[in-house]
Figure 1 (cartoon, helix red, strand yellow):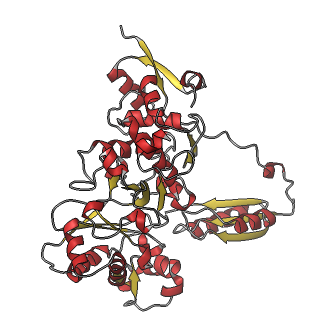
Figure 2 (spheres, rainbow over the protein chains, first blue to last red; figure 1 turned 90 degrees about the vertical axis):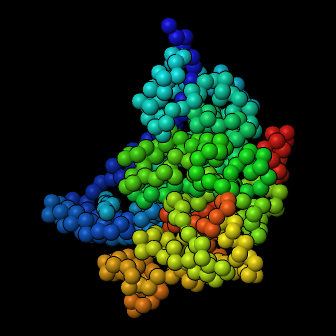
Figure 3 (cartoon, helix red, strand yellow; figure 1 turned 30 degrees about the vertical axis):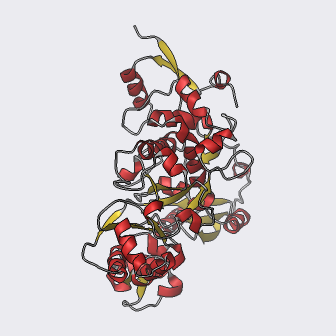
Length: 98
Length: 371
């Protein structure tokens, strides 16, 4: 029978999830939501997002849509883009597509 | 630096297993802590020997590795280094490479998660090359050298185990890459007619450095016929031109790897390293019409709109935007070959030097350890 030995684990756990975002407690305007769209600049992401926006419009009232784009798919959105989405949108949809 | 027994009491820091090589390998494979090859069991004794070469607290992260953003502590990194088969004296260089690739400009998140087949290439310069026996000569990109193979492998294991670059989950590469097993080489400074990469980047020759590049595998450049610099460089420029490369759409830093024989011929014609870069930048340009119509309209005219939005089909698209962006190094042994390495594009290379605790450049691992 083999003896038991202690081994060091090589993996790292994922970071603890952040607290529930403030947006979940926002009060939405019953006359329509302000919809934000963040195109990650992948090919066809713009088409997919347009279809999603149309789908949302068909289901619930939409007061406004702000559409912004990341300069490169592989880099994060700039602070300015995130600030504008935070200021002008109640809900933001991002998408990727290849 | 720290007490290993205390650290291993932390939740998840260790596991108990039967002292059986096959069983341990099966367990680590089952948990996904593997590159598919057998591992050396990371016992506490082996990990502690590795950590003897660490000058920092063993449980404090030196970096966070994307896409999982797992905390790369010396303790976890030591476990991965043991698993890869590293000797303890490799550990400082390994940590340095991990730190370099976690700098923001390298964009490790993109390199890890992309569908592209890139991997971090580590180029080592300085006295540490000889000290650790890192191969920059014959078969430098291939098998057979312990330090190249195991440090490179330890990096991949950390990227998977700590960073979460698990194939089909955190690593979405369409093909993967043989470079994702191990991708570490030295520059062949002794055979180079020019200043080595780290000196070009502002470090003294006696510094020991790593340079990380988000790279594809090398593509061979066979030129047994050209007798002068212009001929060899023309062949390399011809190899650069690739309609499927990411590089033309970014401020990329691809790598021209000159074999020593090619480098010697080029230098004998009076070419400096910058002359080589200028030639290759100027001649490694593909006419726009060589790309597909869809790529021209949806990619090149959009991503390089300032130059190509309305350009004719004979307009030239450079494979590297500026001559100084091209990395030129000498690697390899005898033979009239060079190589060219395309990159992920959306990444900037990073060079970091091995330093002692008081911030002085360490000439060697031994110097690092004594100070």
